[in-house]
Image (cartoon, rainbow, N blue to C red; front, side, top):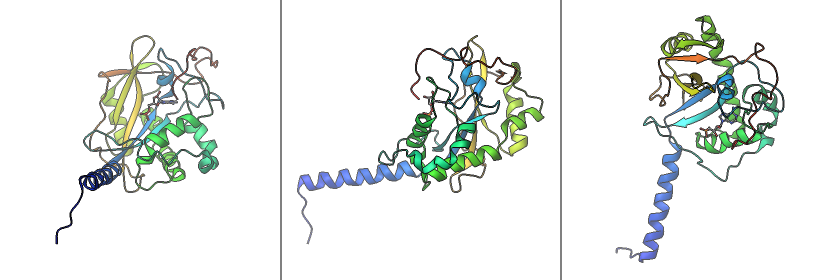
Length: 248
Ligand code: AMP
C-alpha cells in the first residue's frame, strides 16, 4: 500500500533532503590551497599594516591559510557555524602561530581574530580535521615548504627588485616539484608586488604537495616587485600603521 504524505510532511522531507545534500557537498572538496604571504607586500599597500603584539615578524613568508577548494575553482566556506574557534584547543601552538601565522591587520592584535576567521571560514570545511590538527598541519606545511629558500637559491630576493613571475614559479617548482599559483597586490606606489603563493595539497592527508587541479585567478603582470621586509627597513611600526581598523 502506498504511504500518503500531507503537503507539509512532503515539504519537510524536501527541506531535510536539501540540507543533507548541502552539507555533504560542502564537505566533499577536492584539494587544499596552502597559502603563504609575503609580509612586506601585505604591509606595503596604501592600507598598511600593524605588527602583531609579539613584535615585528621575521623576514619570512607567513601563513595566510589552508583552504579546502573545489577543482572548479570555487570553494566551500563557513561549513559548521557551531564549531566555533576555541583558542584553548591550540594554546600549545601559540609560539609557532605567533612566529609563522601572525596577524598583520590593524589594530595590532594577538592573532586570535585572524586564526578564528581562518578556522571558521576554511578549517570547518576540512575533512575531519579538528582544530588542533588543522593548525598543526598548516604549521607543518610551512616548515616543509621553504618558499624564501627556494627563491633565494634562484637569485630571487626580497630586495625591492623586479622579478619575472615565470622565474618565481620555476624556482619554486624546482624546489617542491609542482607548479604554484602566484598572486599580487599593488604597492603604495602603484606597482604590482609578489603577495601570495598558493601550493596545492592532497585532501587525504593535508600534507602531500600535488599538481594543482586549478590555479587561483592572478592579478600579476609578467614582472613584479619583491619588496623588502627585513632588518634593512627601519624598525618602527609607525610608518606601517594605518589609522583605521581592518576587519581581522
Ligand atoms: P580569507 O577570508 O581567508 O580569504 O582571507 C582574507 C582576509 O584575511 C582579508 O580580510 C584579509 O585582510 C585578511 N588577512 C590576510 N592576511 C592577513 C594577515 N596576515 N593578518 C590579518 N589578516 C589578514
